[in-house]
Figure 1 (cartoon, rainbow, N blue to C red):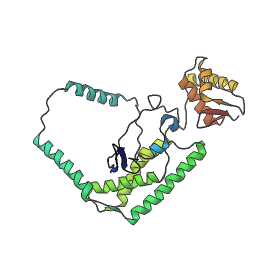
Figure 2 (cartoon, rainbow, N blue to C red; figure 1 turned 180 degrees about the vertical axis):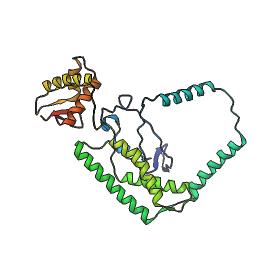
Figure 3 (cartoon, rainbow, N blue to C red; figure 1 turned 135 degrees about the vertical axis):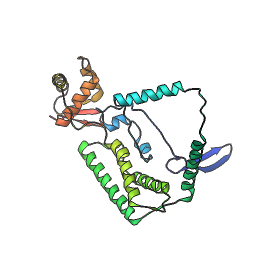
Figure 4 (tube, rainbow, N blue to C red; figure 1 turned 45 degrees about the vertical axis):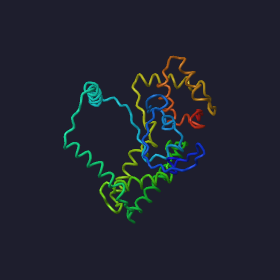
Length: 275
């Protein structure tokens, strides 16, 4: 109710009232396996109800990618925080003035500026919303599965809110085409990428991995006759007994899916062999 209707209903101690809820919500969550797995689909990595996801304006996927320079920067920051713990920080008068000015500027933008969409900006929004919806439908037909993040009218309203926020930052009375295009760019690199994330388009095997894949493929097809279906969890558990890792088995399943030998059914819980 707080995110959808922007109200909170209270019924306690004989008092029944409805309060306004105008606070922004910033939330974070971990995938079920603890970290994002590129060998899994977006639906498997984002284990949150679509009714909840659709209420967020922007959804970002943050991956823990291995990078020497990035790891070094993070390590320096964490060590620096602990090294400076307990030290008294003296804020410069200029820094204090800048901080107060920024707070006052944001407050002024929120209460004194109410930009409205221009006709050109509205046309761009309509065309982009239709394009994203069409792309989402085509992806659902190809993958035979619903997208992890549904694209609904709520997402159109989210782009409108972001566009208006960008205009407010510049104290503009109208939401121009540039504001809408920037909002669409942010939406594409966040929510749209999250909806399309997951299994990679192509998998390259090393000679050792190809030999392992051949053995895993034999075990999978031995347990799964043409036209038969089996629970993915049970199939993986059976093949693990022969000394293969779960990651290698899932990689092989992805490759077999791309080849058209198998397909996932029942919300990716069941594997069906096609040929």
